[in-house]
Image (cartoon, rainbow, N blue to C red; front, side):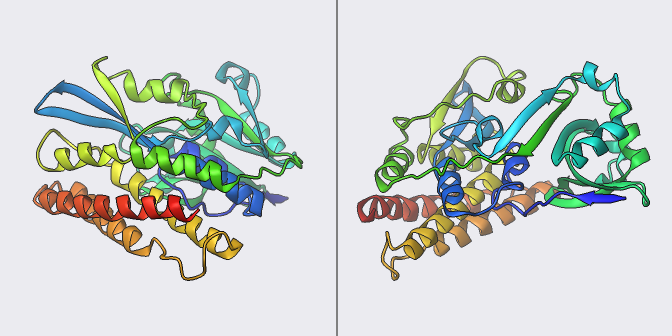
Length: 337
């Protein structure tokens, strides 16, 4: 017997608390509008040690709500690790999938061969969306070789990965059971709402209806950072990134992938608004900004892999150009809406 629940490749793949949800929901109009609104604003934590060492330990989308816990079409049930310990983990996962539920669970990934991390501890959650009893394997989703994709794990691998997981080694333990629910609420977002969010991004403010609560997820990113840090929003983040690439402290490898996902969302948003007739068919798209950001991201990731910082000045110049292009594009978009 086998069963595979539907998944889609999400547009936003920076962090798993986004992909865990976006890989489950469809692209109906009201869903797309809701998704666009969650990926317009950005925030970054800046560790202010001294003027010569200001680093960004965490950067992410500043959504109007925390998408993992608040998606209207997805129910989220948390199962504590001590509860999972009372059942056979293989039977539990299979039973959940049979009920149409996705299992998002923290495990020790070094025992899952698809991760290629057998030599070192790698506690991380995976999404389990299918199984095959005859083949004795599960269908899983995670970041494999740094890219979000779909792979397979044997029953034995999953059992070992769960049983050797050390409680507290990731920033949340146990499992979150995700289920698509029949919620007929059609979220409708008007142009004024989008304009407010875009204005927040442009002017680095947070006047919109933000109710973000990352809970322990954000605690993970700040617990090893001294309390001397501040939060930057919107386009002001460019200033911090450019300063870091010009030599003021190290640069976290996640920041430019987040930035590239942000431009991808704005590109899709403009194309959607053109198709809907809100923007004229010949309205300038976001392709130049998106392509330049992706190029900067690729150069940066290549330098991370090689341990080579020689391209950092070039990346800083690229970000300066992107910032100016985007400042004009966002101002024009607000006026056009």
